[in-house]
Image 1 (cartoon, helix red, strand yellow):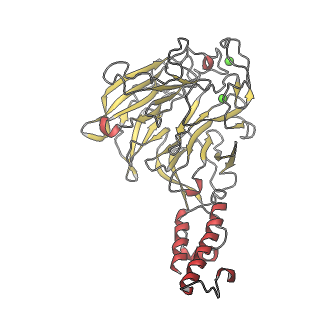
Image 2 (image 1 turned 120 degrees about the vertical axis):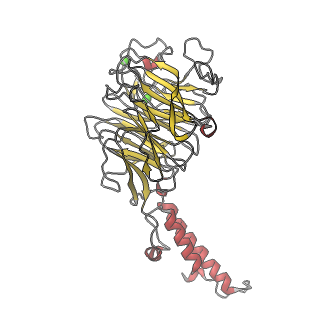
Image 3 (image 1 turned 60 degrees about the vertical axis):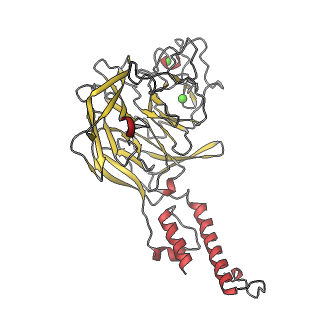
Length: 446
Ligand SMILES: [Ca+2]
Ligand SMILES: [Ca+2]
């Protein structure tokens, strides 16, 4: 390290202080270089910490405060507060939802961006006629941990020809509009090409303005800039087309970009992506395409449906084959672009999983491509099971349902300062911010 010391430098009015500053600045720079080089390459300290035992959870959401809301497919919403589950459900729709089919039930929950003021939240469920229902409820005026069960109003009822492929996620985008992920109506291979038909709400991403008609049916309006407004062939609610069964979509809380996990047929599972400045109208390809591959030339599709690989089709950013996933059952579960604080080496990586295999991946853009990495192919995380959903809290920390429990992504932090001393000028193998701060403190304090 001798080169770091400005010995004999006559220009230094206070050599000792100058030496000290130079030395530690250089040391810090060396440390930062090592940190920057490996912060995104090393996940071995990432952990999944269980926070609650609760089964059948298919959605995890927050209401703009520190509570988490666990939506159970069987019809109830439970509140997670101060490290525990409240005994009484926030909402109980178990007498309303139909859960006979494996993909039916209470599937989605979204709180209005102004929930603290208006108390509105929205649910997506399948009813006794197998239809998808989008409904609005209000919080109990006297109890913030209970909904008013009599407050429900229905925005949309969308018939479903089969019991599978109901989509189910609803989320408010950064634009304040409510997005609804609709599956293609089910069976297999989209038998009547619903996902490509402009007069079908199935197989689409929908976008509603719930601040129109607040007090009168249908309790929503059409955003003026929805892409097909004025086109008589299309339902005006349609934002994007060509989805098979969007099982969990999300918005990057930093950029506003949208990620859609779209469940495939027999060969490929995919993640689609939409930039925050999208004007809508994307065609995600189903059922001309399954992921990056051609699927079928369904003659029941409209005449102007683009062929496989047509430039007008928006290809996914990621797909994986069922074979690579272990064969047999495969079903992607879309997650979140990680922007949290408890597992900092994951920041900037999009998390997703496969429900069947329990495989878990992180992905990030590298140039025009997306680099993907398994997080549980021998480490750092265990093989999962029943990964039905991810969720994000008010701070951006990310959760996952694994079987009958909810887990938080975290990292083994902080390192004891003594552990870091031998490595202060070497490459660290963790992106742990607490460790990082400890070392800076350590360096500054020498
Ligand atoms: Ca078809
Ligand atoms: Ca697609």
